[in-house]
Image 1 (tube, rainbow, N blue to C red):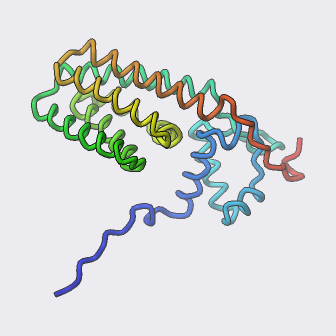
Image 2: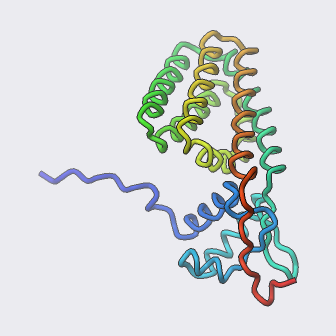
Image 3: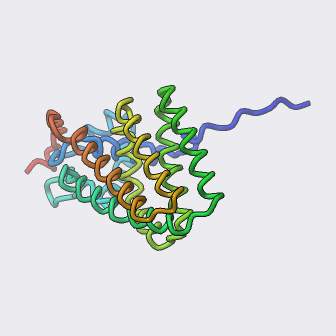
Length: 238
């Protein structure tokens, strides 16, 4: 009889380019790389232990995501700041609130039980301090609401926010107090959905997303010593 094989860690399936891109994106959204910082490719490649090829590709993707900007004869500069983070939070709140309203109008008993199970598992993960599981369940909960709502168009709009939201969750959910607060807010959303109350579901979701967005801005930008600029190379020096 052949022995049972353990599943491969999904993280290992990512290519080097994906890892570099994820690491830089998280550093920017978390505030480690401050807005206005000039990024020297050679220095960053050395710090990451990679060649400049995957780094250049990562920077191109970050520019497409609106996190950095390339300026002729100067180099690449971080553009993501507190104002942009707040703006993205406002956009997400508007979309998620409307999705929650539609979900409350369309949810069936199976949908209620699906969300109840997710909340129960989230409570267990929160109680045991399992950060990774809490983040995963947080995303599962919101995705389930999207599915229940049947709002395919609004869900497609939300996909543009997914990169930011995922990283922001990692920034703020590392704190136990924040995980407990998020759990309470998710319970309120669930209760409104289970009652089929569109007004309450919309209000609870909007309140949750806006508060989370404010917390991300506070954690990533307020009271943080600005990251030291990575020295520009001669060809990047203004």
